[in-house]
Length: 164
Image (tube, rainbow, N blue to C red):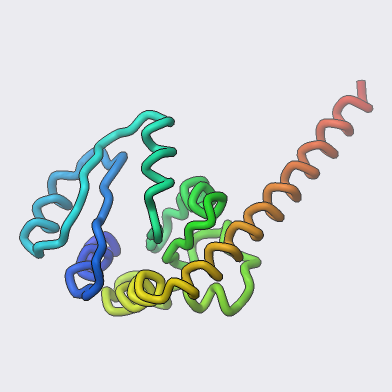
């Protein structure tokens, strides 16, 4: 079973209100067909410009980036910066360093297991306090990561300039 299929099947068994948002996928037709057959509600916004994408992110309660290999670190970081928790696989490096209790809420053990993915989604969608706590933690985490990266870039730039 592919991970994409596992993610879609996770939604098919979810018993809480939700809408799957599709965007940016070049070949969305097979996903739309499967979502329709499984009666999973979705919103296909297609490719969005930066402003539309930012507005769409502001409407998200929970993100999802479950994959065996593709981390999409930047997309996850954008969600984290908005205090939006993201259901993740271990392949997403930007999540490394989050507190263990938050990782337990977000990280799926098996990216190909719809039940595992569904369980993480269910908790985050039905327990507002868990979602808020995870959101606060991911925002603080990405702020630390960003500050550390900015300092490393500053040091590198200063070293290059000192060599001139």
